[in-house]
Amino acid sequence: MIVAVLLSRFELVIAAGGREALARGPAALAPEPGREQRVGEVSSSAEGFGIHKGMRLGEALARCPALALIPPDPMGVADAWEKVLARLESVGAAVESETPGLAFFDASSLARLHGGGGDPATALQARASSGAPPWLAGVVAAVRAALRLPARIGAGPSRFCALAGAVKARSRRVEVVDGARGLASEPVALLRRRPEVASTVEPLMRLGVTTLGQLAALGRPVVADRFGRVGEHAHDLACGKDDELRPRLPGEVLEEVLELPESASGVQLERALVLLVDQLLARRERRGRTLRAVVLGARLVEGGTWRERMVFREPLADGARMRLALGQKLVLLPAPAESLRLTVERFGPSGAGAHALFDDGSAARTARMREAIRQARAVAGPEAALRVLAVDPDSRVPERQAVLAPYEL
Image (cartoon, rainbow, N blue to C red; front, side, top):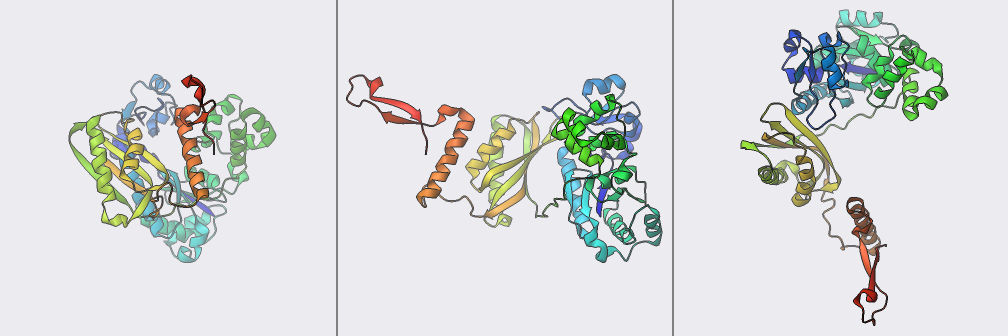
């Protein structure tokens, strides 16, 4: 039994500073600087004007000229959501979360741990839900006690079924959606909550397909002929099928923050990045481990924050190589920053990748050289790696003595 925990409008609430700010009128998250001009999460009053997440900014303002655009706060959202995930993991859940505000876990593994307890009123309401097993009440009670936040909770045999239950669930009640039969009456707009199939919602509605049951009745080949693999995935979701859970691996948090004395940009930011990387690598908590994935963030002078994730090609602890990779992300900073933050998202093994290029056998050396040539050509083109071949060394014309040919191993 998969359980979905949904905190409605989580990113918007964090960026606005609380739910009280959303009661003033229609509001939506402004597009992130440098990204496609589409609004983020919207308030309930904005939904009354037909505005939804992912709508183009011009269309949203045309439908509601009084729409308040709130600057996004990705750093604040990431910090707040990490605390929520830690609370869920404190009850023993192996959590999967791709977007802030929505988390999934397999409740079956918690049945013996929490299945026998829980508040009696919550247990009665959970048993009243169609298809809810008796032990689910204890799990839901443990989750609500750990979160201490208003959350909608749904359950089902797959992630999408659990998501559908969470969307229509109400306070203090878990909603169970039992596969394709329970999804049949749900609106096709529910697919917008899955980014990989969100593009199919508008065409389906123009074709008169308004519910997931109608989509499932079309047949998989028909949908695939119109939408391709995306349509096949959408049809599978409408039939209650979904991928298996991929729980995250909890890890320790290691970060370094650098406050800038004044709004910095350009060369000042590059020097600040050098200092930030050196401070992070010098932390005793790293214990000689390499870094596999890091997050570079900044708090902007004009308000809001900026955040970019960087996964290195291989685990490394070389400051020069880290600065070279992170410098390409730093140029995407949309405005002057008042602080920089570098956070380790995932560690690598100790000492991995700390060997020289020619320190072992010829086979490993050849493999690394071939990979280096491939990467150089991917960046600079096919002529990035060439070799000199002697053609006529005795010729008096220098151009005839040698030619350039592609370097191959």
